[in-house]
Image (cartoon, rainbow, N blue to C red; front, top):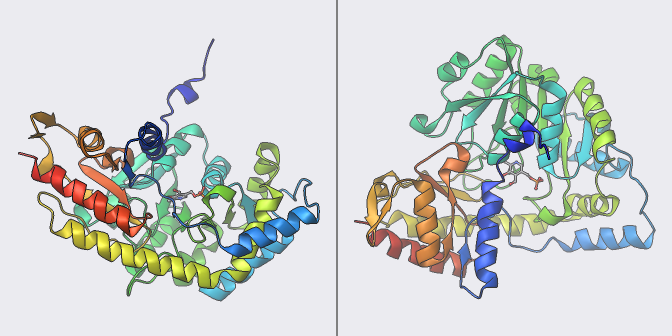
Length: 396
Ligand SMILES: Cc1ncc(COP(=O)(O)O)c(C=O)c1O
């Protein structure tokens, strides 16, 4: 039977695939250490359970309002006021089943077939496939040579009359790099000059370490208000990945359409999970800080262990929970007689020989790199890094 060209072109999520492979090996009794998943290993804060239980006890089992329960939209609005000083009306907010579908819904609302969306590579796997799913064209601006921050001139050169949006993410998955004030102002100016949308994915905005500071572009350039769609959610900040709650906000003109789209797609996010999200946003700031401190400690640990390994290099991550490692010096060399031609072969050999799962950079439009997630316990980090080191030492 026929399958659509759109679906035939889609590639499964490489990060989830790595995790599935690691899970398979674990199920066979193998001692696999996975640095694949972009998922906190903590259990959600107690408030999530308390609010969810209460919602169940109160029988809140009917269709929720499509854009989200009013209490949660109000809470998100208050959060943006508190954290960034930004006035966001509840009516500008749509809550959905995770940040991931909100990006898709945002793209569906602004991209026509053949329209171009600029991605700043290395870039998150799902952006690429989602742009294709709405029949848009992915245009990649590489940032490898500019320390993983976009060069404004190169970005401007990539803009054509078909460009509709720049989709950007800071702190970044996969690099952990953050865009500072100058870059944000520069990208904002390009959006204004060329009449573009910005889709601003700040799902890791609370996971920022040391002296680094996260800005929302509207704090710097209020004139972007009519052209920016913000994506956020509770998955990473509050260890709530399984509850599937994210949200988008932006100008009413587009958010009303996203809401209409969602009304035909999912009818909104699970009501009980929305109450759980409300619980953590209201009451779990202290839990969140504890988890963030743990990530910061893990970042120091993993960076310290990686820094003394042969053949590799990496920029110190400023936020999120990933280290993005350059393995180009390992390629076209061999590991115990096996030639490692690219990052995919490197990852496969590492998994086979040392039972360590990491994601190849190719999945992020960055061949020659690996993404290592440190959203995992310190013992696993120590053991996994010692295996990685042993593997690297064998590369000749
Ligand atoms: C950059 C980025 N945006 C969005 C998401 C999706 O988050 P959610 O679990 O809320 O769908 C992820 C998850 O990996 C991510 O890394």
